[in-house]
Image 1 (spheres, rainbow, N blue to C red):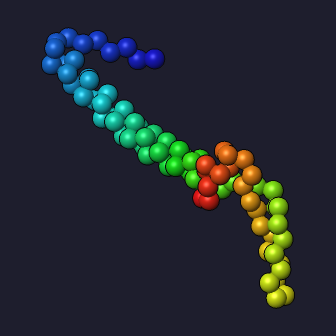
Image 2 (image 1 turned 180 degrees about the vertical axis):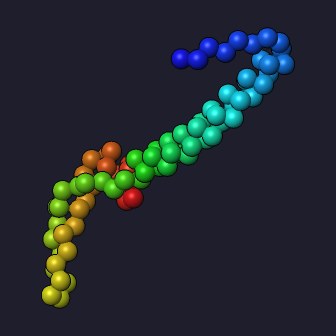
Length: 77
């Protein structure tokens, strides 16, 4: 690991600026990825059991219905 010796206050500001040039983009990308991941987790569909079967003509549909207050609160996503 490289140790950096700072001789003056100006060198300290330059070192801090260089560090921000590296950490800024990393933090920005992390925020974007975190926001996208959080949005996906909040909107992922529910996996409800099939409670009804509807036949319309020659087509059959398996229907899922919410049965608990938590499932009803989440709603359709």
